Length: 90
Image (tube, rainbow, N blue to C red; front, side):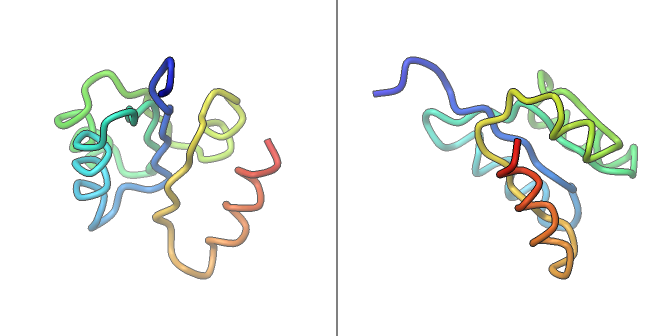
């Protein structure tokens, strides 16, 4: 049993962002801690489901904060490797 929730970061909040957010909310032990997107309307949508999440418009800044336990990468497929490698390096 965990003593605290796993802090999840959503990297991009596109078409499937709400589904990822709802899945995190429905999973015991997970908490949406941060969400990043360059579109302010998508960040607003994320906050409607998870009002306590930190928001970022720069993925590097979100990852550099260093307090995420899990990152869900929802960027275009050709960028997944780059972001996964960076998230695992921190």
